[in-house]
Image (tube, rainbow, N blue to C red; front, side, top):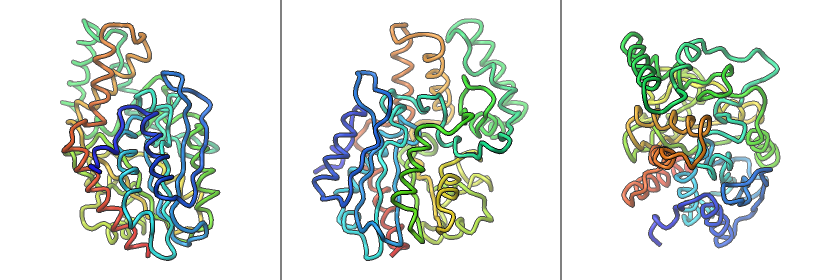
Length: 360
């Protein structure tokens, strides 16, 4: 089968392909976590788990998709392809592979990055008993990001203000202020929330039930939106002095990047899934990466995100620009060409192979 066939046009199709692949390849476990909401056609939503290998394996590789909803189109296709790979469905002795499909099923189904709470899940894994992380840079730019009208003087003024800010502070500072995460503007971009989301609580339960016993854990979270088109950048989500950073480079090579040392296409982010893994699995040795696939230039991606927020804040889908803006949003996170799909699968199979070799 051509790997292109593993990808889907909509969430419900992706879910069906994932479950079919798990069944066809005799997964040792298939588990459903129903979401309380529904998709745009009234379809059921869920986060699903498929495990290959023993339940008590001391070494577990977790491969996740759909942390940022719409990015699940790529991640799901990769997961389905992996379930057609012999090394995944029959992992080495002492190793189990846990595939978690659609961390954020609401965003996946509705074509958004955020959860039903309007939260960026990869900014939500903080300790809410402590003071919330501050990002004063975001407050300075929030008013320009989603003007009440997407065309006309208000939008023109907002774009002029953004370009002046970038000219004064540099694009890297702009990207950090915008994307690093914020907890002060619920209607804003990259909002980390003020409490754990359904998706966070569900993933924590999955980790407790299926990974809590493990001694060594690899985690590959599949993402899209940053970097050269079709290239999968292995991003280490912690600091360069974290011992897991050295392990990640030993597993995946010198191509591993780190936002904290400026080598990555990503800004430094707080509240990541890695922080959730460390909190949920305090006794395990965890080696995480985000495998980030490039789609469109970053400026186009950020503009698409702003347009998506405008659609959901100010209008409904009958408004004339909405279909165009939603199409731009999809294109910013899912390149629907056969060449791109084959490239991302090839890279995923390669990276997963390295992880399994390190865990054996």
